[in-house]
Image 1: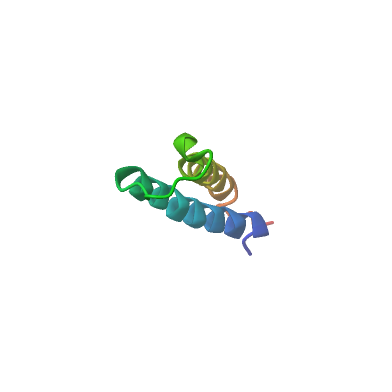
Image 2 (image 1 turned 90 degrees about the horizontal axis):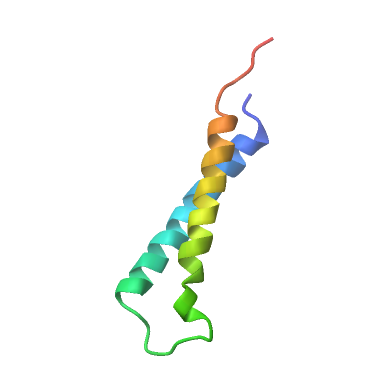
Amino acid sequence: MKPIWYFVGLILLTMGGIIFLSGIYLLIDPPTVKTVLSETHPDIWWGAVMILFGLLLYLKNRKVIIN
């Protein structure tokens, strides 16, 4: 059986990729109405953090230990 952290890593990797790609899209085609801190591009930062953490969890828990 795979540990739960394997699946959490996959979910974080997927959601982080979606958020990161939407941030790249908004960087290329900016919206007309801007929010207060839109210049910092938080979707790109949080997407990258989620991708890195999800990749860490995925790679750490991908092997099955058989006793």
